[in-house]
Length: 353
Ligand SMILES: NC(=O)c1ccc[n+]([C@@H]2O[C@H](COP(=O)([O-])OP(=O)(O)OC[C@H]3O[C@@H](n4cnc5c(N)ncnc54)[C@H](OP(=O)(O)O)[C@@H]3O)[C@@H](O)[C@H]2O)c1
Image 1: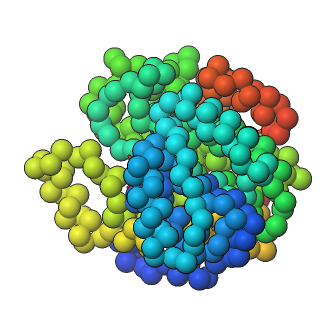
Image 2 (image 1 turned 90 degrees about the horizontal axis):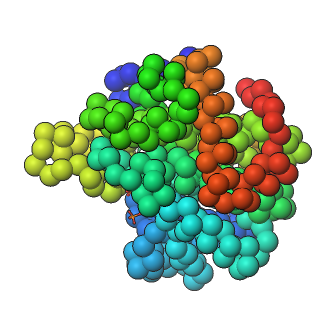
Image 3 (image 1 turned 135 degrees about the vertical axis):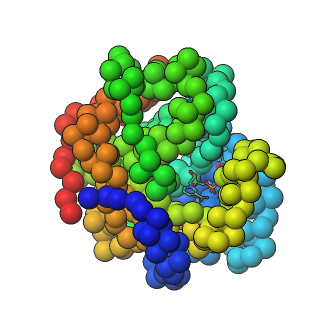
């Protein structure tokens, strides 16, 4: 069963990951979108994709100026002359709908790789303009919405292994995510997680882990509902503990900030090394990628997700969260319901090992 321990973390952090050459693919004529690609793991993964000459590489960023600077750096370090920066804010449903509208009119009809990498880590409770706690919306609801709205384009991509793929960037922090009695006994899991009264400090301390568990749930739920003839491979990936801007919200001068700096110094993978896991999730196992479908990937291989997520209780919460997510997102964009009806089945297919 999926376990995490100090020993497994140390072993993984100090183990070498394969170089990207091991799963490099010619992306000529293919369209790749990396969400949250102006910095961190998304930027380094985009740099790797750029070196494979994609027909289109779309850096989906909430800050276009930062995205343009990232694209400039990619062009300067690879021979790639393409690349586009498109605006999307995952904490804003209307921005996601606008992004998909643009893809509908300018995207060329098909999408080969979608890497859903954006994420935030904060303990501060703040509501988005859509009325959702910011981590819950950015890391889960926004990620799910963009993934589902782009599913038709991924499904229309010519099955040309290793693509099409949808990668959801999760984390081994999901091992610490487990929903308490208050959430389980509530009418709506996501609304309880959004409730300001409920979101006191101990709860917000777990928010990032919970959001990463929701990423595992989403990738599994989506994968298990895709019709077997649909060639899209969906997975969730853990990049491991890496240098990036993820911990930018840790208040400077606090114990946590000193601890994180020390841990990064001792343990963290470089951003480039961590980004290899994203590229592996998008291109690894080129025969057909099906052995990565519906799985949690870590260290550039399939690994087992947390015991809780695999338990009966975890599966039940997953099912509830899926239904609630579709309900919430359908109100934000009516295309969600249509896509679910056209591309997904009501029943989940068991995962093959
Ligand atoms: N670094 C690690 O140790 C680690 C470990 C496990 C998992 N992860 C996961 O890896 C992914 C990438 O994180 P990272 O470490 O590379 O962190 P990062 O350097 O902070 O990058 C996060 C990216 O997400 C973008 N983003 C944040 N909120 C957004 C929003 N509302 N809409 C669109 N984009 C948004 C950021 O854009 P801005 O720059 O504009 O904010 C940035 O491009 C995350 O999902 C994270 O949970 C990281």
